[in-house]
Length: 247
Ligand code: FPP
Image 1 (cartoon, rainbow, N blue to C red):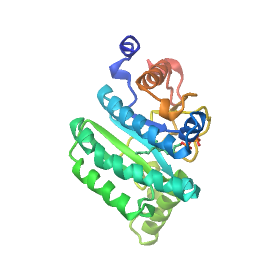
Image 2: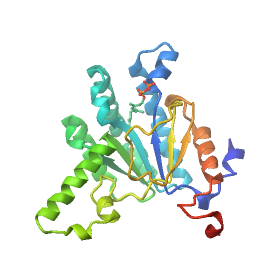
Image 3: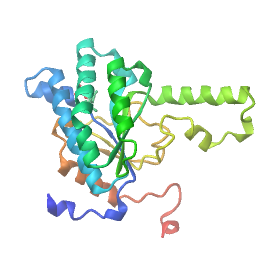
Image 4: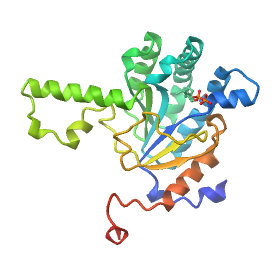
């Protein structure tokens, strides 16, 4: 492990890492458990990964914890996920403080149960001065809904003569997204072998590198994170230019 970690180039880590944590249900099924137990195990991977990402010196980490589409799951599963969120926020506040991690949340947060929203707001408030890593939890998040919401907010400003149509550019859109305080995504990891983006950070991932692994989220350990980062470091990001222009 130390050997592969030492191959990482500190100056060339992604500034913003985003993860689609997938495969909790399949992990549970393959071990003979109910789906909800997979989410419990997945929570351990969340905590471990957040700490590892912070220690590596990455500045921003966004985790897809609950999508707008996840509201269509059975009530028992939704309740388990919300209870896990509440208990983890309570229990891990000290971990966030110890590692100077600032928590923020993106998504349609008003849809969350009151108790979850209260706990979330409390931890956000208590960690707002932390400077090491910004951890964004995507909760009740959907990128299309985010873009619709931003469009409405911009349209309202045009209607009220706060901005003119000619003023609208990419930064206007950026500034009306949930992620207005976050940089673009550099690396997007998805676990569990699915090869899709599932309505996650569509605008923000325009130039992201993608990394897919068959590992199920509850099995995702530091070695898998380091492997993804090493793969990222081998890529040449051209942003539409040619190789020679990058030198
Ligand atoms: C995908 O697995 C995972 C989720 C829908 C939720 C992610 C939640 C956690 C990792 C635990 C709680 C999070 C926090 C922040 C404390 P899936 O159920 O879609 O798996 P499957 O595709 O195998 O069915």
